[in-house]
Image 1 (cartoon, rainbow, N blue to C red):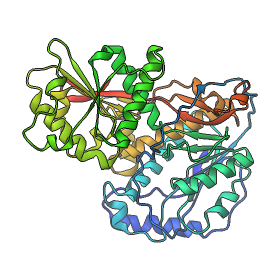
Image 2 (image 1 turned 90 degrees about the vertical axis):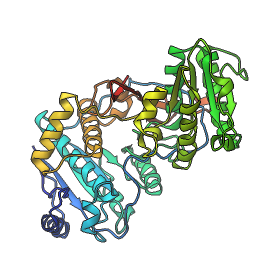
Image 3 (image 1 turned 45 degrees about the vertical axis):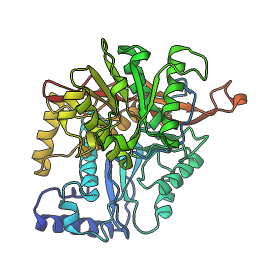
Length: 452
């Protein structure tokens, strides 16, 4: 069985309940460490000194586009154990807690509390499936992080932490000790290298571009597609990468430009000058790809869509974009419908799905609050890792590519990223790290967003 000894973090508006729960956490953290027992247990260490300010679902990307060679590997020896030990590092920051932070919807404290509760619900389901896990939950943002990490030298899996700098430390530690390190939140080629123990569950920027281009080319001819950007180095680099992807997809020579490019004069978005007049196809659909993804691009994206909606009149258009188009408060669903916007998305919750409805009902009955998407994220992650660990043992990262189950928000497509060193491409000892490449294309149909 799984014995969860700590109390769940509060999500309701009951501040008195919050204080009692937090007090129990702090009192428990002061108890001496117990020896492991045969049944699984969860122990929470809650000392902390700093605040967690970043959102759980923030995607960390580097601007450098890498051309990693992707392949798969499934022939590792099976190493099964009676019980597996998992360390989960979360930025609880309870030493400096403010009850209002935990109770405020959208705060990082509230989102990580939801994430943790989702993890606990997954552990309940894993217990029903017969899993034997010992899960130790640490506050990564307090006291001596490296001391806590050193306690995990005999663990099978380390999940997190969230902070990029601490994640780099954890990745190096896990590589040295041959422990699988799961990164649920960070996606970057600069975290670690030559590390077959590091698994990134967030798709990197390149995966989003590939998903967009693959979908566009499956439905439209290259001469219908226009890559849009500003006349600056960043957008030219993004457009150039799309051209490379298009060449590879169509087996064209390097350097050829099979897609249309159009650099927008930003001033034209705010005045009466026409921005898109020459881009509308008379007898066909004009397909626009906007590769911008960061919060710094939000204003530009909004202006592009606003002006496009004005100028398109009765022309047929389709727009592809990055997750920021859904996340932005400025881009309304009217634009999605009018411009046939399609967005690449790693995780998407279909609330009409019976499994999602069941989870939301169970979550409410247990925590007296409705879950935010972070709770589903934590549930999916823990169920995905737990099931594969129990099935394939300590080297389960090598067989994650075989898991195609649909979880509450997504399915996973974990592939290995190869080192580019030519002399090492002739064997299976050349893994840089593993990364999830699974993305869905989300569009607006029948008055709601759906997964295509």
